[in-house]
Length: 332
Length: 301
Image (cartoon, rainbow over the protein chains, first blue to last red):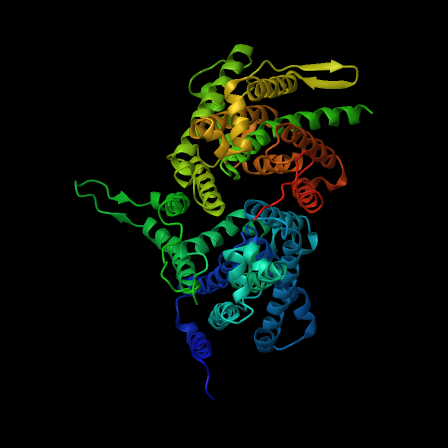
């Protein structure tokens, strides 16, 4: 069989994820945890990139969609799965992916619910509404006793492994890429470039915006499911505004509407805090003799550096760090 | 009935504070057309300046003079801060897209919050008890109990609203503000220095936010670096509810949000009080996007 280049890449990534997953038992668990976190981040950043980057909308509620997915799949695997009496292997390889799809679908419904009213809104208004939706989802989860409320949900089985996280990451990147390179996908870019002109050309801009929100939220939900089965514990506080900002920063740093840049930024920004934490636990020898200098302060500085980076980036290089002419929009 | 009146009073007080913050959002939106995310952190800093002036500078507590001094100090510090933020972060972005400015504003907000939370550079993450700035006493009107602090909040908020109205409608600079807000290009054509007006607007709005922070802290006497986020968001909702860019609208919106929130807190739905404001926001944007007092603008191509 002959596959086009992109499909071949996807297939290679999936096989690689499978192989990595097979040898993962020999990898240090902490390292494994960090690496799987990278996969989840890539899914989140790529899906938000579809909304914020390619379609030119501005969503600040991605953590909310993620929360919907996380809780959906966690409830399925902790409440429904034990009653089925399936073999654990079947649970991890058949039931878990099904629960991820369910998580994505429910998150997509939430995404459509946000997308529908937000059609009338632009820029900063849309940002606030999505932020509001995210907060509402968090407050509702906090008040639902069924899912543990503010105490959180514990005992989520650790079904996420390298195959599921990286397989999903590859699939997400591929889907977003393939979508945008289809005839249909050019509509998203047109909406981002000039909404009025797109409308004048006969494009149904509303439909494109809703679709972007739906698909973006779907993958955010799947990422939430992966996250839940990676951490084993869910807490509504973990899906706050800060989490949304974290994903937004990945998209902005990578350059809104760039595929590779955003993936790279997601990897970088997930590894960076771990690196800083590692660095913060060390100390450098004092060249003047005396006690060694502790690098403890680095840990505390993480969020300050993040926000400074955001401001400086916007002032100096609003197109993102990894901007090259990857996207041949004009003239093509 | 007493319970209702008591709740009404609490609602009006909370509403007055929201109104003070909402005015800052609405004024900045009027001249620059963007949401100043850092506004809620200026509000937080206002409370901390008052705390500092008592704890470190030794202003007397429980006294009218000391309380007013702390209030004025935090208003002035916040005004200066607002102007500085505008000059450093927003002014270089004057011609850029709304999105760029919005992201910068979020960055500034995060920066202030995180510096404030840092125990070396700022105040540290732990909540601090806010001192009683003004003489505190409980007054009884029939069955109704009112604290002197509540009276101070009401008095200060109303006088500030009055002063703001006077500035905007009866001074030269206020007229210039309205002109810039109406049409920035035309305003600069008739000789108004837009940059100066924008700075002034930021200073004025930030001073109001600072005052709001002090008043809020007097009523809920515990302050922490993240205390601004929720009141800030609700005040923003208030500004949108009233019609963003519209000053009386912001005051009205603040009052309504304060009342709704207080009455919801009194019912079984109290745990959802923080979600109510967003529910209102979404409903407003769906059914009357221009807000209660705003006029819908037709987009021309």
